[in-house]
Image (cartoon, rainbow, N blue to C red; front, side, top):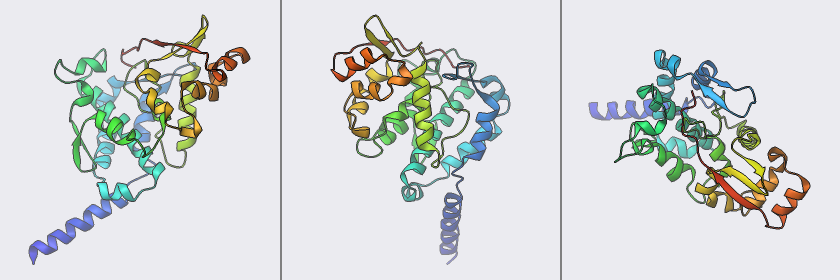
Amino acid sequence: MVAIVFSVLATFANISRAETFDHQHKTYAQVLENHVQWNENGTTSTVDYETLKTDPNNLNQYLEQLSGVEKSQFNDWHRDQQLAFLINAYNAFTLKLIVDHYPVDSIRDIGSFWQSPWKKRFFNLLGEDMHLDQVEHDIIREPGVYNEPRIHFAVNCASIGCPALRTEPFTAEKLEQQLEDNTERFLRDKTRNRYRDGQLEVSSIFKWYREDFERGWQCIGGLDEFFLRYADSLDLSETEREQLRQGAMDYRFLDYDWKLND
């Protein structure tokens, strides 16, 4: 009888904890507001890891909130709540990884010959021990689930070459606007995406994850159509847009800058 009572109490505690999850991610918002800022051009951001390391309480509290969500509760959320949760989780646990090893020159310095930093199982999410690659590649990018290539401009790997870490959390209510904004900011950055010498020179993100831009999001079937959609952000002329329409655009994928975004 006692065991049954404890079991019931534990069940109610788990339900209560998950149901009261803050989908506005307010604790995480404090972390970002205090430690992340947009750079002058508005296409990149920097993180004050040094200060965050001295006062990680809000970050740790938020990570506990994330880890408290059970898979069954997550499955009951609607799509945008799930996706905002996963993007924020990836970014917040990346902050944790850097803070725990700071100072470092690059996130890749945290890995080893045998294990990359993205394969380190250092956190619990949705009821299991996970690594960052699992969140991004096995869950967010799983074919047929979210079909959202713009997540590549939302998840942040703590590097200069990455799209910017926003100064606010992703939320379900603002997810579409936030994903579009991050995409446009990234594509406007001519250090990472530009037309030069008769070809588009773009981030290696488009090489590594090309298949995600070919799966039919917004009826887009490839890079030509994707870049045509964002031709204004890329500042393309009508002649350059016509090259995309005709499938006559050449691409060069730029080297990725893995230096820390601090």
